[in-house]
Length: 408
Image (cartoon, rainbow, N blue to C red):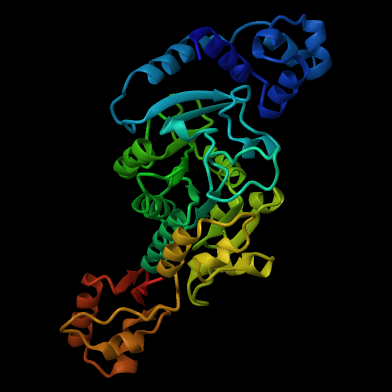
Protein backbone atom coordinates (compact mmCIF):
# COMPACT_ATOMS: atom_id res chain seq x y z
CA UNK A 1 0.00 0.00 0.00
CA UNK A 2 1.44 3.36 -1.00
CA UNK A 3 0.96 6.55 0.99
CA UNK A 4 -1.78 7.93 -1.26
CA UNK A 5 -3.89 4.79 -0.92
CA UNK A 6 -3.33 4.78 2.85
CA UNK A 7 -4.43 8.43 3.02
CA UNK A 8 -7.69 7.75 1.18
CA UNK A 9 -8.64 4.78 3.37
CA UNK A 10 -7.82 6.62 6.59
CA UNK A 11 -9.78 9.62 5.39
CA UNK A 12 -12.81 7.41 4.83
CA UNK A 13 -12.79 5.71 8.22
CA UNK A 14 -11.92 8.86 10.18
CA UNK A 15 -14.65 11.04 8.65
CA UNK A 16 -17.16 12.02 11.37
CA UNK A 17 -20.32 9.96 11.08
CA UNK A 18 -18.75 7.19 8.97
CA UNK A 19 -18.81 3.97 10.94
CA UNK A 20 -18.17 0.48 9.68
CA UNK A 21 -21.66 -0.05 8.28
CA UNK A 22 -21.72 3.34 6.54
CA UNK A 23 -18.24 2.81 5.10
CA UNK A 24 -19.24 -0.56 3.69
CA UNK A 25 -22.38 0.96 2.15
CA UNK A 26 -20.28 3.63 0.45
CA UNK A 27 -17.75 1.09 -0.79
CA UNK A 28 -20.51 -1.16 -2.10
CA UNK A 29 -22.16 1.71 -3.96
CA UNK A 30 -19.13 3.54 -5.37
CA UNK A 31 -16.11 1.25 -5.13
CA UNK A 32 -12.74 2.37 -3.75
CA UNK A 33 -12.36 5.46 -1.49
CA UNK A 34 -10.87 7.46 -4.37
CA UNK A 35 -14.15 7.12 -6.25
CA UNK A 36 -16.21 7.94 -3.17
CA UNK A 37 -14.44 11.27 -2.71
CA UNK A 38 -15.00 12.14 -6.37
CA UNK A 39 -18.79 12.04 -5.95
CA UNK A 40 -20.81 15.26 -5.68
CA UNK A 41 -22.34 15.93 -2.28
CA UNK A 42 -25.81 15.52 -3.75
CA UNK A 43 -25.00 11.97 -4.87
CA UNK A 44 -23.45 11.03 -1.53
CA UNK A 45 -26.51 12.42 0.27
CA UNK A 46 -28.65 9.67 -1.25
CA UNK A 47 -26.53 7.04 0.51
CA UNK A 48 -25.46 8.58 3.82
CA UNK A 49 -27.67 11.62 4.41
CA UNK A 50 -26.78 15.32 4.28
CA UNK A 51 -24.62 15.62 7.42
CA UNK A 52 -22.23 12.79 6.54
CA UNK A 53 -22.20 13.81 2.86
CA UNK A 54 -20.95 17.27 3.82
CA UNK A 55 -18.35 15.75 6.17
CA UNK A 56 -17.05 13.58 3.33
CA UNK A 57 -16.38 16.63 1.20
CA UNK A 58 -13.51 17.81 3.43
CA UNK A 59 -10.63 15.80 4.90
CA UNK A 60 -10.63 15.59 8.73
CA UNK A 61 -8.35 18.17 10.31
CA UNK A 62 -6.08 15.56 11.87
CA UNK A 63 -5.85 13.34 8.79
CA UNK A 64 -2.28 14.19 7.81
CA UNK A 65 -1.04 13.61 11.36
CA UNK A 66 -2.81 10.23 11.44
CA UNK A 67 -1.34 9.24 8.09
CA UNK A 68 2.16 10.20 9.22
CA UNK A 69 1.79 8.25 12.48
CA UNK A 70 0.61 5.18 10.61
CA UNK A 71 3.32 5.50 7.96
CA UNK A 72 5.99 5.78 10.64
CA UNK A 73 4.60 2.70 12.40
CA UNK A 74 4.68 0.71 9.18
CA UNK A 75 8.31 1.54 8.49
CA UNK A 76 9.97 1.86 11.89
CA UNK A 77 10.15 0.05 15.22
CA UNK A 78 8.77 1.92 18.21
CA UNK A 79 9.77 1.58 21.84
CA UNK A 80 7.31 -0.18 24.11
CA UNK A 81 5.50 -2.01 21.33
CA UNK A 82 5.71 -5.59 20.17
CA UNK A 83 8.84 -6.06 18.09
CA UNK A 84 9.79 -8.23 15.13
CA UNK A 85 7.34 -9.49 12.54
CA UNK A 86 5.93 -7.68 9.54
CA UNK A 87 3.43 -4.82 9.65
CA UNK A 88 0.56 -4.16 7.30
CA UNK A 89 -2.60 -2.14 6.88
CA UNK A 90 -5.21 -4.38 5.27
CA UNK A 91 -8.45 -3.02 3.84
CA UNK A 92 -11.67 -4.56 2.60
CA UNK A 93 -10.25 -4.28 -0.92
CA UNK A 94 -7.15 -6.32 -0.02
CA UNK A 95 -7.22 -10.04 -0.98
CA UNK A 96 -5.48 -10.75 2.34
CA UNK A 97 -8.47 -9.53 4.34
CA UNK A 98 -9.75 -12.45 6.49
CA UNK A 99 -12.72 -13.90 4.68
CA UNK A 100 -14.45 -14.94 7.92
CA UNK A 101 -14.85 -11.29 8.93
CA UNK A 102 -16.75 -10.48 5.74
CA UNK A 103 -19.72 -12.44 7.11
CA UNK A 104 -20.16 -10.39 10.30
CA UNK A 105 -22.52 -7.43 10.46
CA UNK A 106 -19.91 -4.68 10.58
CA UNK A 107 -16.47 -5.81 9.42
CA UNK A 108 -13.77 -3.17 10.00
CA UNK A 109 -12.91 -1.42 6.72
CA UNK A 110 -9.28 -1.23 7.87
CA UNK A 111 -7.27 -3.74 9.89
CA UNK A 112 -3.81 -3.17 11.33
CA UNK A 113 -1.73 -6.34 11.43
CA UNK A 114 1.61 -7.11 13.06
CA UNK A 115 3.37 -10.45 12.86
CA UNK A 116 3.86 -13.23 10.35
CA UNK A 117 1.64 -11.65 7.71
CA UNK A 118 2.66 -14.35 5.20
CA UNK A 119 -0.18 -16.43 6.64
CA UNK A 120 -2.88 -14.05 5.52
CA UNK A 121 -4.79 -15.48 2.56
CA UNK A 122 -2.08 -18.07 1.96
CA UNK A 123 -3.22 -21.37 0.44
CA UNK A 124 -2.15 -24.51 2.24
CA UNK A 125 -2.51 -28.22 1.78
CA UNK A 126 -4.44 -30.27 4.33
CA UNK A 127 -3.15 -33.61 3.10
CA UNK A 128 -6.73 -34.49 2.14
CA UNK A 129 -8.06 -34.78 -1.43
CA UNK A 130 -10.23 -32.00 -2.73
CA UNK A 131 -13.95 -32.75 -2.89
CA UNK A 132 -14.30 -31.36 -6.40
CA UNK A 133 -12.26 -29.99 -9.30
CA UNK A 134 -13.46 -26.41 -8.74
CA UNK A 135 -13.02 -26.35 -4.95
CA UNK A 136 -10.57 -23.59 -3.97
CA UNK A 137 -7.77 -24.50 -1.61
CA UNK A 138 -8.33 -23.68 2.06
CA UNK A 139 -6.82 -20.40 3.18
CA UNK A 140 -4.88 -19.44 6.25
CA UNK A 141 -6.99 -18.28 9.19
CA UNK A 142 -9.74 -20.60 8.02
CA UNK A 143 -9.40 -22.90 11.05
CA UNK A 144 -9.70 -20.70 14.11
CA UNK A 145 -11.19 -21.31 17.54
CA UNK A 146 -11.54 -18.57 20.15
CA UNK A 147 -10.50 -19.31 23.73
CA UNK A 148 -11.65 -16.66 26.20
CA UNK A 149 -12.48 -16.27 29.86
CA UNK A 150 -11.90 -14.45 33.12
CA UNK A 151 -9.18 -11.87 33.67
CA UNK A 152 -8.91 -13.25 37.21
CA UNK A 153 -9.03 -17.01 36.76
CA UNK A 154 -8.37 -19.65 39.35
CA UNK A 155 -5.00 -21.40 39.00
CA UNK A 156 -6.89 -24.41 37.64
CA UNK A 157 -8.66 -22.24 35.07
CA UNK A 158 -5.42 -20.72 33.79
CA UNK A 159 -3.84 -24.17 33.49
CA UNK A 160 -6.91 -25.53 31.71
CA UNK A 161 -6.87 -22.67 29.18
CA UNK A 162 -3.18 -23.18 28.49
CA UNK A 163 -3.53 -26.93 28.01
CA UNK A 164 -6.65 -26.72 25.83
CA UNK A 165 -5.02 -24.06 23.64
CA UNK A 166 -1.88 -26.19 23.34
CA UNK A 167 -3.94 -29.21 22.30
CA UNK A 168 -6.02 -27.27 19.78
CA UNK A 169 -2.94 -25.67 18.22
CA UNK A 170 -1.25 -29.06 17.96
CA UNK A 171 -4.33 -30.32 16.15
CA UNK A 172 -3.80 -27.67 13.46
CA UNK A 173 -6.10 -24.91 14.71
CA UNK A 174 -5.36 -21.24 15.29
CA UNK A 175 -6.29 -20.09 18.80
CA UNK A 176 -7.82 -16.60 18.81
CA UNK A 177 -8.03 -14.50 21.96
CA UNK A 178 -7.76 -10.92 23.21
CA UNK A 179 -4.35 -10.63 24.95
CA UNK A 180 -6.09 -9.73 28.23
CA UNK A 181 -4.85 -10.90 31.60
CA UNK A 182 -5.91 -14.33 32.80
CA UNK A 183 -7.45 -16.84 30.41
CA UNK A 184 -6.54 -14.88 27.25
CA UNK A 185 -2.85 -14.74 28.10
CA UNK A 186 -2.79 -18.41 29.12
CA UNK A 187 -4.45 -19.40 25.83
CA UNK A 188 -1.95 -17.44 23.72
CA UNK A 189 0.98 -18.91 25.66
CA UNK A 190 -0.31 -22.47 25.34
CA UNK A 191 -0.82 -22.11 21.60
CA UNK A 192 2.65 -20.59 21.11
CA UNK A 193 4.20 -23.49 23.03
CA UNK A 194 2.61 -25.85 20.49
CA UNK A 195 4.01 -23.96 17.50
CA UNK A 196 5.70 -26.14 14.89
CA UNK A 197 8.30 -24.79 12.47
CA UNK A 198 6.50 -26.24 9.48
CA UNK A 199 3.07 -25.02 10.52
CA UNK A 200 0.73 -23.82 7.80
CA UNK A 201 -1.31 -21.66 10.14
CA UNK A 202 -0.33 -19.23 12.88
CA UNK A 203 -0.72 -20.93 16.24
CA UNK A 204 -2.51 -17.92 17.71
CA UNK A 205 -4.03 -14.55 16.84
CA UNK A 206 -4.32 -11.73 19.37
CA UNK A 207 -7.15 -9.26 18.64
CA UNK A 208 -6.38 -6.20 20.73
CA UNK A 209 -8.36 -3.15 21.83
CA UNK A 210 -5.62 -0.55 21.33
CA UNK A 211 -3.43 0.65 18.51
CA UNK A 212 -0.70 -1.83 17.64
CA UNK A 213 2.00 0.65 18.60
CA UNK A 214 1.36 -0.17 22.25
CA UNK A 215 0.73 -3.25 24.38
CA UNK A 216 -2.02 -3.45 26.99
CA UNK A 217 -1.71 -4.74 29.64
CA UNK A 218 1.97 -3.85 29.99
CA UNK A 219 2.80 -7.13 31.70
CA UNK A 220 2.02 -8.89 28.40
CA UNK A 221 4.74 -7.04 26.54
CA UNK A 222 6.96 -10.11 26.20
CA UNK A 223 3.96 -12.28 25.24
CA UNK A 224 3.01 -9.73 22.57
CA UNK A 225 6.54 -9.83 21.21
CA UNK A 226 6.36 -13.63 20.95
CA UNK A 227 3.06 -13.36 19.09
CA UNK A 228 4.42 -10.70 16.72
CA UNK A 229 7.48 -12.84 16.07
CA UNK A 230 5.70 -16.14 15.44
CA UNK A 231 1.98 -15.49 14.94
CA UNK A 232 -0.35 -12.50 14.40
CA UNK A 233 -1.67 -9.45 16.23
CA UNK A 234 -4.70 -7.64 14.80
CA UNK A 235 -6.47 -4.40 15.66
CA UNK A 236 -9.19 -2.30 14.06
CA UNK A 237 -8.07 0.75 16.04
CA UNK A 238 -5.77 3.40 14.54
CA UNK A 239 -2.14 3.61 15.53
CA UNK A 240 -1.87 5.69 18.68
CA UNK A 241 -5.21 4.56 20.17
CA UNK A 242 -4.78 4.19 23.96
CA UNK A 243 -6.65 1.70 26.16
CA UNK A 244 -10.30 2.84 26.16
CA UNK A 245 -12.78 0.73 28.10
CA UNK A 246 -15.47 0.71 25.39
CA UNK A 247 -13.06 -0.62 22.75
CA UNK A 248 -12.45 -3.96 24.43
CA UNK A 249 -15.99 -5.40 24.34
CA UNK A 250 -16.36 -4.02 20.81
CA UNK A 251 -13.31 -5.91 19.52
CA UNK A 252 -14.88 -9.16 20.78
CA UNK A 253 -16.97 -9.42 17.61
CA UNK A 254 -13.69 -9.80 15.68
CA UNK A 255 -12.53 -12.57 18.02
CA UNK A 256 -15.76 -14.50 17.48
CA UNK A 257 -15.98 -13.49 13.82
CA UNK A 258 -12.60 -14.99 12.95
CA UNK A 259 -13.46 -18.23 14.72
CA UNK A 260 -15.63 -21.23 13.93
CA UNK A 261 -16.37 -21.60 17.62
CA UNK A 262 -15.76 -19.89 20.96
CA UNK A 263 -14.61 -21.78 24.04
CA UNK A 264 -15.22 -20.13 27.42
CA UNK A 265 -12.95 -21.57 30.10
CA UNK A 266 -13.94 -19.58 33.20
CA UNK A 267 -16.29 -16.62 33.47
CA UNK A 268 -18.27 -14.84 36.14
CA UNK A 269 -21.82 -13.84 35.29
CA UNK A 270 -20.72 -10.32 34.33
CA UNK A 271 -17.60 -11.40 32.43
CA UNK A 272 -16.76 -9.75 29.13
CA UNK A 273 -16.11 -13.19 27.69
CA UNK A 274 -19.87 -13.80 27.79
CA UNK A 275 -20.16 -10.94 25.29
CA UNK A 276 -17.87 -12.88 22.95
CA UNK A 277 -19.99 -16.00 23.45
CA UNK A 278 -23.20 -14.07 22.73
CA UNK A 279 -21.70 -12.56 19.58
CA UNK A 280 -20.55 -16.00 18.45
CA UNK A 281 -24.08 -17.35 18.87
CA UNK A 282 -25.53 -14.37 16.97
CA UNK A 283 -23.02 -15.02 14.17
CA UNK A 284 -24.19 -18.65 13.97
CA UNK A 285 -20.97 -20.02 15.48
CA UNK A 286 -20.51 -22.82 17.99
CA UNK A 287 -20.24 -21.94 21.69
CA UNK A 288 -18.41 -24.23 24.11
CA UNK A 289 -18.11 -23.94 27.90
CA UNK A 290 -16.05 -25.81 30.47
CA UNK A 291 -18.02 -26.51 33.67
CA UNK A 292 -16.55 -25.96 37.11
CA UNK A 293 -17.36 -26.10 40.77
CA UNK A 294 -20.81 -24.93 41.85
CA UNK A 295 -19.00 -23.05 44.64
CA UNK A 296 -16.82 -20.99 42.28
CA UNK A 297 -18.07 -17.61 41.06
CA UNK A 298 -15.75 -18.04 38.05
CA UNK A 299 -17.82 -21.01 36.90
CA UNK A 300 -21.25 -19.40 36.99
CA UNK A 301 -20.90 -17.76 33.58
CA UNK A 302 -19.98 -21.08 31.98
CA UNK A 303 -22.89 -22.82 33.70
CA UNK A 304 -25.24 -20.11 32.43
CA UNK A 305 -23.96 -20.66 28.88
CA UNK A 306 -24.50 -24.41 29.18
CA UNK A 307 -28.07 -23.83 30.36
CA UNK A 308 -28.56 -21.61 27.29
CA UNK A 309 -27.38 -24.34 24.92
CA UNK A 310 -23.59 -24.12 24.82
CA UNK A 311 -21.85 -27.46 24.50
CA UNK A 312 -20.35 -28.76 27.73
CA UNK A 313 -16.66 -29.44 27.08
CA UNK A 314 -14.39 -31.82 28.95
CA UNK A 315 -11.64 -32.35 26.37
CA UNK A 316 -10.26 -30.87 23.18
CA UNK A 317 -11.99 -33.66 21.27
CA UNK A 318 -15.35 -32.24 22.39
CA UNK A 319 -14.42 -29.05 20.51
CA UNK A 320 -12.93 -30.70 17.43
CA UNK A 321 -15.88 -32.99 16.77
CA UNK A 322 -18.22 -30.00 16.36
CA UNK A 323 -16.08 -28.23 13.75
CA UNK A 324 -16.78 -28.50 10.00
CA UNK A 325 -13.42 -30.02 9.11
CA UNK A 326 -11.08 -32.60 10.53
CA UNK A 327 -7.48 -31.98 11.61
CA UNK A 328 -4.66 -34.17 10.40
CA UNK A 329 -4.90 -37.48 12.18
CA UNK A 330 -1.42 -37.59 13.67
CA UNK A 331 -1.54 -34.10 15.13
CA UNK A 332 -5.04 -34.69 16.43
CA UNK A 333 -4.07 -37.87 18.29
CA UNK A 334 -1.16 -36.08 19.93
CA UNK A 335 -3.28 -33.12 20.92
CA UNK A 336 -6.20 -35.12 22.23
CA UNK A 337 -3.93 -37.28 24.34
CA UNK A 338 -2.55 -34.13 25.95
CA UNK A 339 -6.07 -32.83 26.61
CA UNK A 340 -7.60 -36.01 28.00
CA UNK A 341 -9.23 -35.08 31.28
CA UNK A 342 -9.50 -38.74 32.17
CA UNK A 343 -5.77 -38.93 32.85
CA UNK A 344 -4.90 -39.68 36.48
CA UNK A 345 -3.82 -36.77 38.65
CA UNK A 346 -0.06 -36.45 39.11
CA UNK A 347 1.44 -38.10 42.14
CA UNK A 348 1.94 -35.81 45.12
CA UNK A 349 5.48 -34.48 45.55
CA UNK A 350 7.81 -36.17 48.04
CA UNK A 351 7.42 -35.00 51.63
CA UNK A 352 3.73 -34.15 51.42
CA UNK A 353 0.70 -36.07 52.63
CA UNK A 354 -1.24 -37.65 49.77
CA UNK A 355 -4.24 -37.78 52.06
CA UNK A 356 -4.41 -33.98 51.98
CA UNK A 357 -4.84 -33.94 48.20
CA UNK A 358 -7.51 -36.59 48.54
CA UNK A 359 -9.29 -34.53 51.19
CA UNK A 360 -9.04 -31.38 49.11
CA UNK A 361 -10.80 -32.93 46.13
CA UNK A 362 -11.38 -30.52 43.22
CA UNK A 363 -13.68 -27.91 44.75
CA UNK A 364 -12.35 -24.83 46.57
CA UNK A 365 -12.04 -25.46 50.32
CA UNK A 366 -11.26 -23.30 53.33
CA UNK A 367 -8.56 -23.99 55.90
CA UNK A 368 -11.23 -24.81 58.49
CA UNK A 369 -12.89 -27.31 56.16
CA UNK A 370 -9.56 -29.02 55.47
CA UNK A 371 -8.80 -29.22 59.17
CA UNK A 372 -12.16 -30.89 59.73
CA UNK A 373 -11.53 -33.38 56.94
CA UNK A 374 -7.94 -34.27 57.82
CA UNK A 375 -7.65 -33.72 61.57
CA UNK A 376 -4.31 -31.97 61.02
CA UNK A 377 -3.28 -29.14 63.32
CA UNK A 378 -3.04 -25.65 61.81
CA UNK A 379 0.75 -25.50 61.58
CA UNK A 380 1.13 -28.87 59.85
CA UNK A 381 -1.80 -28.22 57.51
CA UNK A 382 -0.43 -24.85 56.43
CA UNK A 383 3.03 -26.32 55.89
CA UNK A 384 1.68 -29.08 53.66
CA UNK A 385 -0.52 -26.67 51.74
CA UNK A 386 2.50 -24.43 51.16
CA UNK A 387 4.54 -27.40 49.87
CA UNK A 388 1.76 -28.40 47.50
CA UNK A 389 1.36 -24.79 46.36
CA UNK A 390 5.08 -24.52 45.59
CA UNK A 391 4.88 -27.83 43.71
CA UNK A 392 2.09 -26.40 41.53
CA UNK A 393 -0.54 -28.86 42.75
CA UNK A 394 -2.60 -26.48 44.88
CA UNK A 395 -3.67 -22.93 44.16
CA UNK A 396 -4.59 -20.23 46.65
CA UNK A 397 -7.85 -18.43 45.84
CA UNK A 398 -9.35 -15.18 47.13
CA UNK A 399 -11.22 -15.51 50.40
CA UNK A 400 -8.73 -17.87 52.00
CA UNK A 401 -9.73 -20.83 49.83
CA UNK A 402 -7.51 -23.53 48.34
CA UNK A 403 -8.06 -25.58 45.20
CA UNK A 404 -6.35 -28.62 43.79
CA UNK A 405 -4.82 -28.08 40.35
CA UNK A 406 -5.36 -31.15 38.20
CA UNK A 407 -3.70 -31.93 34.89
CA UNK A 408 -6.22 -31.43 32.11
